[in-house]
Amino acid sequence: MSSLIWHLVFWTLVISKAASANESSTPNAKVSSCNVTGVWRNELGSTLRVKAEGSEVRGVYQTAVESTHGAAGHHRSARIIGMVSDGTQPTVSFSVLWEKGSCSAWVGQCFILDDGAQVLKTFWMLRSVADNLASAWGSTRMGEDIFFKTGVSN
Image (cartoon, rainbow, N blue to C red):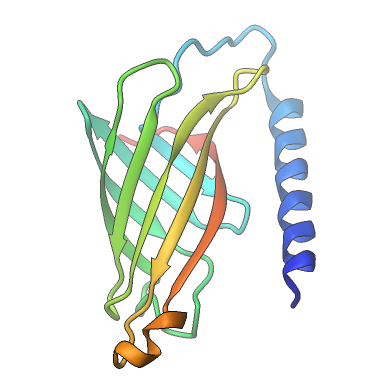
């Protein structure tokens, strides 16, 4: 699929998710600080379950997509570790080491929307294992994810 079509699909999903978040929010529930701890889902259906303690972030990432079949491992999930800043809309970074040896990293910021919904706006990099230096040029992919908070984890 061409990058233009992927871009259009991405923004269609983002707009529909934002509209759903706006429709389901309670007008009286005003969030004053974006809390990274919780359950998040991105536009492709991947789930991030994270707990922030101080500046440390830990949890589990369950991917809905893979670069190639089986690349993320049998369960398509991995532990995450990362960091989060202080503040009402903190910056965050976290990494995953996949079962088959590739690794992913996200960096972004937690935002509070006008309706009180919380989103993580991130950029990611995926590094797949290359057989040798000559084939390494195509082993890194980059993109953008927006995670919508769907619940609170313990």
